[in-house]
Image 1 (cartoon, rainbow, N blue to C red):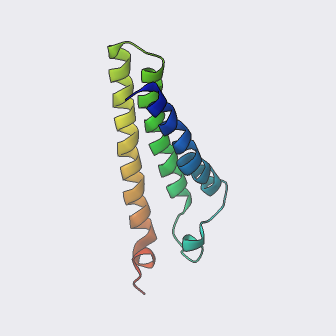
Image 2: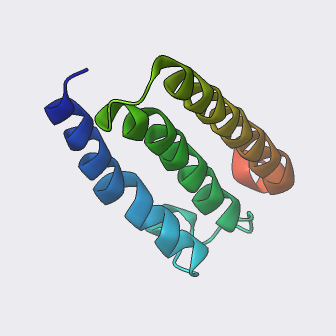
Length: 103
């Protein structure tokens, strides 16, 4: 990935992922989740984990870090992605039947 592509990913992620995630953690609820009794802040934390994974893999490449540093941060990014998966599973379990449309 080129330097320009990395910057586009970071800026696009900040606009489309970081800003809504921080807003959800601050108490804002998207229109499609306003009636749900699901733990919406978990979705904000999930978004922060995904954006953190993007940062963990993109920043070392942008600063032209050594291979060992890039590999280490790639593992950190992978751990953040697994954390995001776990948060999504936890959200789905805690939302229960309400989230899946059953009464």
